[in-house]
Image (tube, rainbow over all chains, first blue to last red; front, side):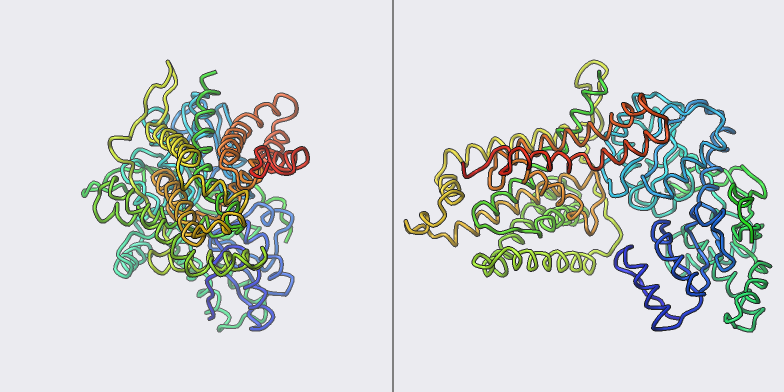
Length: 322
Length: 304
């Protein structure tokens, strides 16, 4: 099983091209960013390959352009933020200021949040994907005086955003609500106390009480000596899902229809608990409200507080005809 | 109104950071005729130098010294080892060689520090926000950046107009051959100027560290905007770099902050957001194009 780590997101397409043409690889997974998936996945599918997404679930592949050989194990992008919108509604917030980077997943994020948030949107800002200083946006948020700030800034962007939110003195005045990618365990470790009190919604958390998750968290912590992120949990689920399908087809991927039948059974114990594929081969799953609290050592950690959405599919599934 | 003021301060803060980078870049181009794409790497080296000392000692003052030293020494070493061989070559060779330096520095930092971004805390003395005007709170650290940037600009102005080194810098920028003919050791001057440029880039990098994440490639993000500043201000002109940086910093921030809102008054929400986000990211490049059309040598050309 060849694995290549690109030096730069832009190389994803070239690497997939090489795997397809020179190495005759059939089954692909691993892309994190929606924009990279958008550039790479159509090439794989057109060449008769199979793609199983462990993270990105952009809206444009979930509806009319869904594909028999395209599976998403993580989530459709919007659902992350639909759960956040529902969470904000449940928590009683009435006026929200919302921000996301100006790319597909950012647009999906704000669309998803607005779909389930019942209050008023007092400000909506798209940041640049390469932006690292958010001072101008912080000032706008302060001026709008909302009940809550919802933001989607994954990875390093999220760390910079949270730190600057604290530096601007906003953390104590306007509560923040995010979806899972803006508050994973690596971000929490980097931000420290600044993250305590943030409301998060997620499909998975390290404290979920099921045997598969307990095993995953214990073995991960033993090997890497840090808490797993939700990215890791999804990749683990993706591997379990592929393994279950391959077991049913005796390891063959040449017959994509046979592989599809096996894959759609989702015959594996997901670390997030209940899991099945919807009609567009994206997950149907539960969403949970989490909150950043201090653990016994005083380090910020995500604690599960309750369910936000049950057996939640996605908005685009009805448009998909497979 | 208070919002406009706060956004102006944000713009000035971005402007002085850009000035520190652009001053070095424009001096190096003006005096030595070298296009130094690796200038952003010196910014990164300054930030990493400070981050390393900060995590080892916990002192921000020592970290600042460490970052400055790392950037200046790195700058002088690359001048001595690489750039010196490029003065007589054409710009394409310079661009290729300094682009190679970018790759080298990025990979070296990955090997030394890894890919995970590093975070430096704000020194306790400079944390928190102050009331600059009634109702306008602004982070102390960002104010400190503005103060340091303007102080450096004044010091550079005094140095260039009132010292012997400054006289050589001015002469070098306008009459390079004549300076050499008068028997000035041009090689020492070149190394000094390159080291000075690197020092300023390192200063910008180490001050940005506590606000942004210190990470591989942080220099390239800001380098492109720095080139815009140099083109708008006029190549080789430190005065141009100062005003160009402030113009770019303020207009970028104000466009980002207010353009989507203004457009929303004129058209429907989603179109206004898309157009506003697009226009505000293009804004400074449009500005550069207009300046090039009206004043092809920039607003404050060095060569008259």
